[in-house]
Amino acid sequence: MESGITRRNFVAAAGAAAVAPASLGAAEKPALLGGKPACTVKFPSWPIFDKREEQAVAEVVRSGQWWRGNGKKVDEFEQAWAKLTGAKACVTTVNGTNALFTSLNVLGVRPGDEVLVTPFTFIATINVILRQHALPVFVDSDPESFLLDPKKLEGLVNERTKAIIPVHIGGNCVDMDGVMAVAKKHKLAVIEDACQAWVTQWKGRNVGLWGDCGCFSFQASKNINSGEGGAIISTNEEFIDRCWSFHNQGRLRRGTGEFSYAMLETLAMAFLGTLLASLAALPLGFLGAKNVVSQRLFHFGLRRLFDGLRGIDTLIWALMFVNAVGLGPFAGVMAIAVSDTGTLAKLFAEAIENIDRHQVEGVRAAGANRLQLMRFAILPQVLPVMLSHA
Image 1 (cartoon, rainbow, N blue to C red):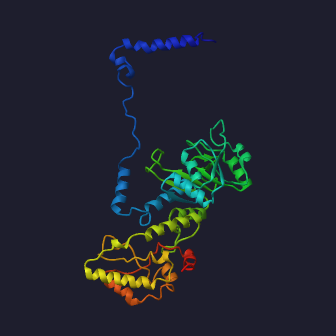
Image 2 (spheres, one colour):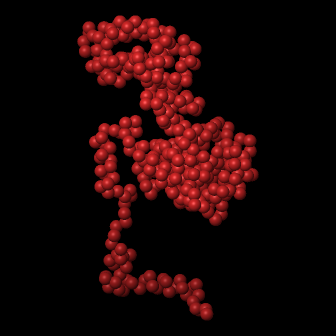
Image 3 (cartoon, rainbow, N blue to C red):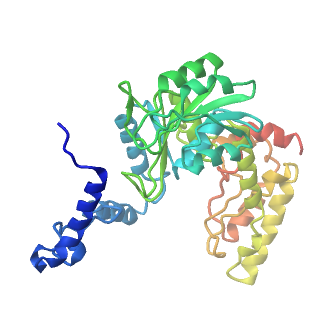
């Protein structure tokens, strides 16, 4: 049965209803016209937090353990996130962008490669591809989900295609069956950008577990956030080991109890070289002295020590600094390579055996404490290359 109400009549009636409340009493007026709001609860501000967050932050601040090297909070979170997502392992990063950047590097995306990706995403997904000097190739969207359409992948694959980045948006999943079929056929890496879709499932399997890895974000706008933060998960623990090493200066994720390093990626190696070069440029002038006598002894011993190290490549011996007690603002920060313990000590023992012990003792007498290797300075794998230039 038809109502007999036309579109014109409906609009006219709606307009009249909007004007009618003006004649009502104050108590009957809608909030729009000065009446009492029906909802008196304030819209919550963002981020939402309470004393639990305040206590957690204060606990870390008071502990003095502000980085993952001497604290447990990051490790605990990685284990919890891996468990929540069903991954075998997890590594956290400074943000979701860095998670994508790390994954691209570890999976070997290099200049000239092409990466298939949706244009419906946050710009960071594209930026990390361009950062590799690779080419983002846009895949058209599925008209139903607006996400990457796997049926459009096949026609875009060529000899330069290296990887696919399906982006899960707003808790909605890309058709991962279709993506993985193309990836397996052409042996392409798959990085799931799940920064906007946590613990979402495609056919009962969590996002991030379909491809080589899944990347997440804990940026301020996310449901659970830490202001900034990111994570990489995978069912392949060896892959996470490599991600950990790449994002942490080449260190091994599962070391031997002492600082050890791995030369896993060319870019990681290049970054370390840049870091070491900047350290080598740190002026020795900051190492002052308590008085003129100790200063002269200090520099005399230091010169003699460097004379004994002249057979070693410049990049190595230029990094040998004195860990001086009470001799300036950098006291206790740097060190000379003459320790008898540690991985690098064993590697350098033969190279520095021509150093006279009395020269070392002279530096000690001038105010230096126990001398040790600058453990974080040199990659063991690079030592033969460096010494070949000596």
